[in-house]
Amino acid sequence: MDGTLLDTIGDLSESCNHIMTHHGYPTHSRDVYRTYVGNGIAKLVERALPCHLRTPEYVETIRLEFVQYYQKHIYQYTEPYTGISLLLEHLDKKGVKIAVLSNKYQAGTEKLISHFFPNIIFSAVFGQRAGIPIKPAPDAVNEIISLSSVATEDVLYVGDSAVDMLTGKTANVDTVGVSWGFRSKEELENEHPMCVVDAPEQILSLV
View (cartoon, rainbow, N blue to C red):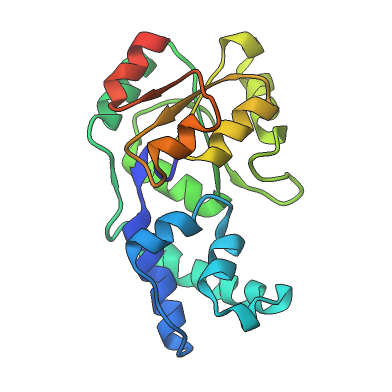
């Protein structure tokens, strides 16, 4: 979702910097936050904190503060990438089953998807959930495949980071990288996806 369907870096960076400023810690640029996201909110907070404060207990304290603030400001700067809404509409009309898998916490994932894509039917919308390993573990992908009643060889996993490409690999599904997200094209290509696309409409030719 983040970096693939939605450009969320503005709200993520502003919210995290708000918490950092509140506690008197250094803040970071949006470009720096692009390298911090992708592994869940706890890891984002850990990376943003000064090194000497990165204990599990304190990271959890700051994570809770972040989620409380972010949930209230989740739409301020976020928007779909150009062409994404049209792509999802085309896929939906073609009968292609679509699912979302994010390392963002579940409530935030659901809130964003329902707000920006209210007319799209998703087989599943999964964020980080208790008891389910986050990406690149294959557990949630396998769950989505089961819920969607599709064959593994018919799945196309699309994402913007090495974490996403590794997730596809661990689940034994084809992967496609998108170059418009938070990470570089080189990072994606280093994980040897089926291909890297530069525009959403290119995905239509792959399904």
